[in-house]
Image (tube, rainbow, N blue to C red; front, side, top):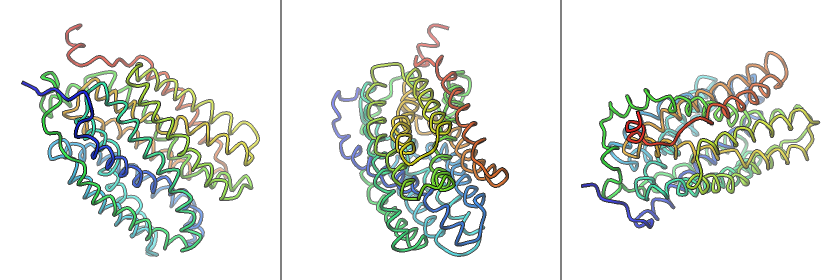
Length: 405
């Protein structure tokens, strides 16, 4: 007989705190990579496509390895996966700092950090925390954890800019590699659930879980919608500083805009998680994607100024990572938590395919057209498509679907 989870967050407090701090560091450092595009490219004599490709590859490696990191986390617990991820992340940042040519930079930024992120971000952290709280509290727990991660995106941008100014870009990367290693001890606060929180309907094999997911239309719709999120987030994070510089707006403004996105997203992710426990999560996702489309269109169609950039950052921050607790919460609601890390990792792979496209395609289009206009247009179109894809998704469990079939 399956043990029922306590209605309170008994025993989950330490995991929630450590998981939140892990996301704060991991996502905060990642969010600052766009500040390095210009100094690295100018110092090394590269076009923007080289840096963009490295970050795009990072997202692709992250996404491709995430289902496997999730599978291992489901099997052995999150602690060892997070610890190894921290070491790989730190090694990748240190490798980026070496002046060893494009291949070395791509190895660090693309491969090592991509692998490190697969062990230190939300698919693994969310699943571990979800197993420690009651089902009705999972969406809120994810929202709280993600809001702390969003604060990292706010806090790490001025820190990273200060390091670049004070230590140059190489010294800044070394300092960030040391910071990332702080994730290693935090991993030991992510404990396994004392007793399974799944019910009998969720207690299926690895193969059956994959078969159930791949055979479900809603799983594919959720994944395809998440592709748009990945494209937009990485394109904006990596290319917005350069876009504003092209418009004659200084790097300080870009830093504040990206920081505003992270700051406002603290509220955005918290309320997304809170409302996701009370309302249909796919419907909320549709509204978020529509909001993104309006925000991006308004920004690029109106004259670009420092003021309009600040407004864009604040508005976009409401929707930035608000999709994450809702998307992961939908996976948990439909499939349960036994294989959540793996299944959420597969959905996240679609997100990272979009991230690869947003990071690399932005640089590729710019180098060939001298403009980001086409990339902005793609971001708007994908947002509208994602809104349509998420609208019909149901949160009914597999057992409910089978009963009504």
